[in-house]
Image (cartoon, rainbow, N blue to C red):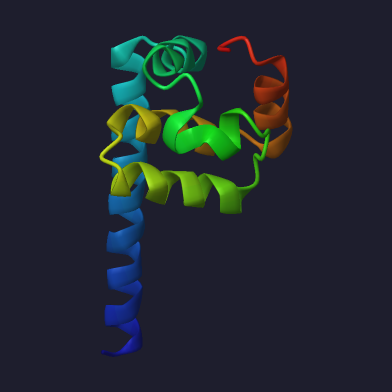
Amino acid sequence: MNLKESRYTLAKHSTLVERVDKLEAEKKKMLNITLDDLCLRYYQYHPTGGSLHVLLDDNNVSNAILAFCENNCIENSDPCGQLIVDFFWDMDERERTDFVEKGLYK
């Protein structure tokens, strides 16, 4: 692969990533659901935090923990947990901390 082909491939990949990100944002908007709503519902079925225990109960909000929780949700077939993690990825660490410290979903 030459330099021109590499640039084309990279540009094509970047465009696809942007399109996927846009679709994800539109999906959340279409769902018209908030993170508070999702977490409240999640706790109805997982009172101890389920796949997201270390995030929602222990207030661990780092990217490494999000990745761990995301994998945990996939391994445990937990689509609601995955959607919650998607919302957290859209926040910076301060916003995540504020959300879990309030704990309105508990």
